[in-house]
Image 1: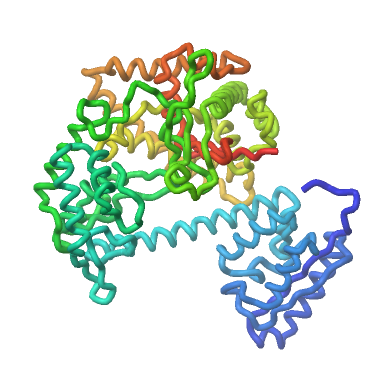
Image 2: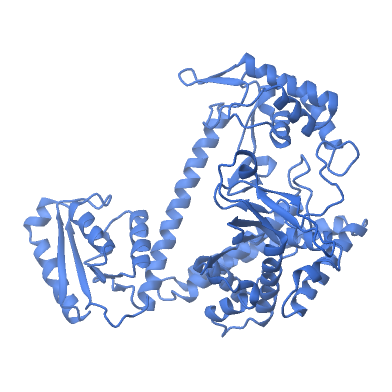
Length: 570
């Protein structure tokens, strides 16, 4: 926080708690009170203080009157410090303490524990508390793992774990059983009939909408929802669980060995053999092939198609061509699909003309900043380099969390823009192959190794060196095992070598990246019109997961390596 010439003198909120009447009777409160007052005066040089006492209250949660009153006044800006006897006076629940500390840090309030010598106004105190927060995160993760284990056990026993009841079925909560909803089941059967007749997801959706046979949501059918209906094993009487792990606007398909399938779980609407025949038909109708119901290729390349989401409603932004310019150029325009359909989202549209220069100049800055990054580079210097140029004149600053993660990533020496060949996963019905899963696991271990290093460097007195070495070696061994398996997979395909298309794609990536960093400022229109538009499209798709758009501006970029950079405007 910035110092102000009119800043009031420091004032401490002294919090005291004992949990039993026995402790109160033994004068524990007066002892804490006296020592903390003296500590505030003589160790912290704070003469202004106020005492908050909770006598006879447990630390199992923060539902205590004096504590709640203190936090209310802290939020009002009355105190500069919170002083306690020990951390467990605040809470023995690490999650509660982590939440409180995060709030204090945001408010700029210093937390001090007398007996444990935690003072967040200095580097060591901050590092010690980060250790506490790491264990809080561990507790959260362990709780999540326990819940996941229970859910998986329930699924294995055929117990429904909740969620949206599939279209075509009713669910009885008392008997915990599914029954067929005959009116909706008739629509499911019609979907199969239509697709088997026309082999087009788009035509099937259009026919359903024309007949007024809408799903429960009332939202018109589209090729994606039709595709889901045709492929869902639920309609053949199979309960499938743990198939997808939801995450933001995208999903990760878990390895097949982790999927749970319960046969004959409920009455079937579609015969399994019929569904397999339809799935085989869809696989043969992959994008770009004649007669494909998934084909959207009309000879036009929309550079950012499939990568833009609306920051207002979270919906996808669909691409169309803008009007033709005087020089013959027709850029793409991306509109919020919800705004386009229902007019209930204020986010209208964004054009290549505005986001193109922003995207490519930012990536060029990132490549240059990565190449010039050194051990003495400050995080403020990195931010300035990333926002260099006219394209960012309206940007005030980057989000701190993403900037710090990017900074630590560069310090670790791990590549920021890792090459991932454009995937047809969105068009395929198969789960990712072993190679892709191994690469994903390797990146996760590399990020964990980087976080471990940062934790040890900034808290050497708190984290035992032997613990650091042990965990570091475990991660390094895991990465080595993955590298060994990746090498085996590459060797097994060495006979066929790399296809011409794969070679061109990979070569194009590196050539394009080189061209970006060779230019101080990129004139987007001139730059993009001189090359095959599929090259920059593949380049962007290989490194970026998502762009989030609000009022015609990019508010965040989520890279494939998991780093999310947020932009805050003036």
